[in-house]
Image (cartoon, rainbow, N blue to C red; front, side, top):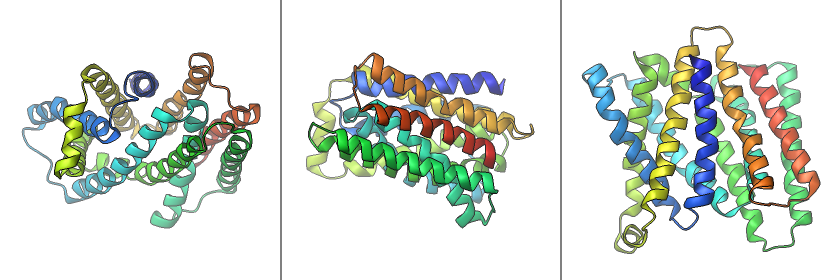
Length: 292
């Protein structure tokens, strides 16, 4: 079943990116991220309460949720903004750097020693991402504002890389860990995101948007992507090596999105950017398989 859930998460991740590009380009990023988390919480919290009859009380569980909620609130806004306004064929391959930063987090936070192959792949991956940025900037003929979205994507990858290694810690703490983590994470995340609307001028963005369908589509895709990935991780915890395949399968949404950017949205980045990006994705997948 974890294979099926991984594939659903893959498809949902592709749909989420396309929803941002197609329906949400004019919607304030804070409102978009906040809405997705709030809708996910509204859907999942009743299911959690029906299943467990109460909220979890494990302090480690809540500590991880608070940490990852703050981190991913920032990362999600950076990545969403870069997807909305940057080229998919450049922005998404940069996310292949997430395993690199996960590996660095394991080294510095958990004192784990990676093997030589992991170190080599990490170096290659970062070289490829740097080459992407170099060739993009060299071939950029439009406004330099396009380049900043690649920087946003890198910053998001750093934060997602750190938070990724924390997710399994929370899931292992309690029964029905994937459901509890998904529900409580979205609840706390929506509360954190709500603080960004404090103040008179910022509240006006809630009155401006009439893109309800776009927000709803994006939110449902986000809910599916997050929940099914976490559930696949939960199911694979006791299966030797299965978590490797979960993360590998879900990460395969990136080359799909790159192809969509080139074929459907007619993006025309320099050839070396495309090749470096695809190579970075392959290296990132290999890195996942070497460290998990």
